[in-house]
Image (cartoon, rainbow, N blue to C red; front, side):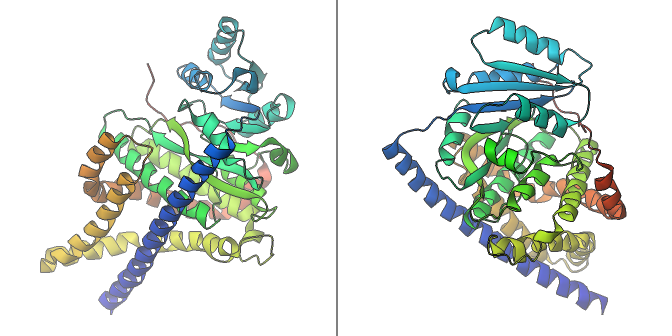
Length: 421
């Protein structure tokens, strides 16, 4: 009886996953076609370069703040249309001093420094945008991240479409040569390919903090970032979606490249994923009215299907240890190699295809990554472990969600990352 139940679960979850993979692959292909058409149209009409404000929130970032700042300065964007704001949230190290010294050495750069008592990342972003930002477009760039030289000019082009109010950047993990770093490189490649499909079907609901771009008027209209969740970026995205995602589009910009550091170890990864999972739970609780919302201003595929599907995915993932254990049992007990090879071929092939079609990665590097991509089927279980711990942690804390939101407290939560020389 138990074997029949587990077999049924494997069949159901496996079928849904295959459909999901196909759905994302088709969506990603459609995105590529539309992107090529957009670029051709852009060449005909010319490049649009509105005034841009880049806000870098920072708290005790002396080891990396100048690298992030310099990557913005090095962008191929007119200096007379670029404003940079470093929002120092009560740093106790040399973060503010380093930025002030940089400003003295580069007087022609429009660099503003906002300092405040430690109140959290969302507070720092809000103060900077509300009191100093003048750009039509606002990018929020984490202090441990950096930009490709063309990132700002490419970002501006996506906002030709007047409906677009928010855009997620194409974030890459900066290589360090370690296995743990390599696993996260593949994870980001796959997850950001998925975002292409989410944009095509207009069901994106997360604009991550690294390199995220917004229309300033839209930010002000929704009251900027809330300060009562630990993932202020997800929360802000869903605040924008409350306005309706037909007239206000939330998209992914594949050509807007940003780089961030990988988490160093499993303990750090678990802490990161626990924060992401609980922060998303807080956000879902706050914006629960979007679930199964049939208002015509919303894309019903988002509200009636994809948001509920996100919750279903967590429920299904809860059974993964049981399913994996049963599969291992079948392999050992019956020597059933098909049970091993089938998911290896599907998942390994899916990862390989995601790498090969990621045209923002140089061709030589793509082939190198593709050559070992199938092995990520096994290494991704490290990510699954972190995600599972986060799922259980979030489940235990679920009963505190309302209390945590009402408390209106969201502080910085750093994880250790590599130091940049």
